[in-house]
Length: 498
Ligand code: NDP
Image: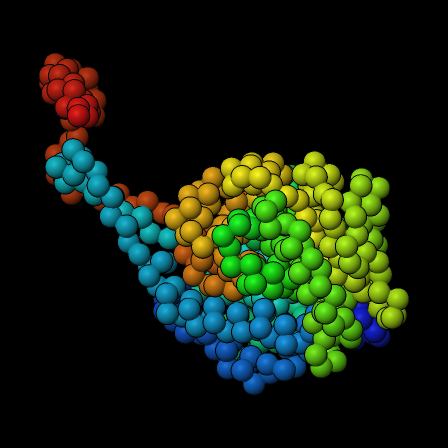
């Protein structure tokens, strides 16, 4: 059986890959486990040196990779380069320079009184074994690639399953790693197939699952993982808000809102999906944002000058169109867009802005994974934070103000994995910064130090250089009772008084 890849903008077939059967996948895990036993013996520095070689291949294939991403997802190739390819090269370089600091750190612990008995403890990090990386369709290169690099540098092997919508990008990721001569075979294997068919094996045979996708699938994976107590890192849906206070740089905020909502046709976990405007600026800001949005050029993403391409497939497009219909029934007003773009055969939705929205509406509460931006107004900063928090998701947030201290104060009140002051979306591209959410947006973090710590187990090593029996060992005789009296004195010294 094969999986066909379709260009969502032109509906042409891009190519196909062979599906992996669940039985073959079981064998792939066994091979990955055998490969990992050798791979983990290399030093972190050596593994990082091998992995950073991905940049040699990518540098020679920047345009091909960007075009493949474009043809499978519907986004412009320059956007694919900027948001996916460049970010990965930057991350590879960063991990090469910084992995040892995290993974080889030997954290000595303060044992207090026990240190006086010649005892010491420290923590080292061990690879977990085989990591399943399960990727989404929207950033099919950058998201899994980053997770694969972190897992491999940490000494794991990886079984990677891309979304069935983006199998050729998945294949390209395997090509990139296969171009590295000294990467042992079996350390990374890309498999293809529907998540509902391969999911059970991907979860039950792995030592760790790093999943990116919808909250619904994340919950199904966590349920399955409970059977084997397999730890999971879940990067799930979002409904990221942008809060504009009256003192913000409005010219910059308008362009940020436009990019933040409509880049990748709104198919971004962290795209701006709710816009909260202070009532004093709402009318003017909305008018200018709508005008700016109407100027976006939609079209075949491989044509020069196109800003907004297509949705990934017909199902996603129809889900978004239904959500727009639902919003209209709830009382939202379509200020621009609001429909499938009739000029094209492919799955295009016009950039859509919805006015007259209230926080309780479904279009404000639920993730709409497409180019749709509901606008809500507020009277005070405190009200804006309360409205923002009154939502099931908590991935990224954005506050716009020239008063940075006030912005940081408000940021600390927001339930989110990341709060950007005067920025939107882009911190995903910063390899050192943690990526992940709270509430229905997921569990765990990828990228940077925290991303490495998701794919290792901490090993506590305790060393005892005391050469006599410990005081608390049996027998519990008179000497023991006396020793415990001393302990009681120590216990009483542990009170903190002002
Ligand atoms: P899906 O949840 O539909 O799919 C994600 C991946 O999971 C695909 O590879 C899919 O395979 C696989 N899958 C499906 N069912 C199972 C299963 N039972 N067991 C194991 N794997 C399974 O998400 P989308 O690809 O549609 O991505 C969009 C969603 O991802 C949005 O909600 C978005 O917000 C979120 N997302 C979150 C990010 C974050 O960092 N927090 C980043 C990017 C996206 P297949 O498709 O082949 O069936």
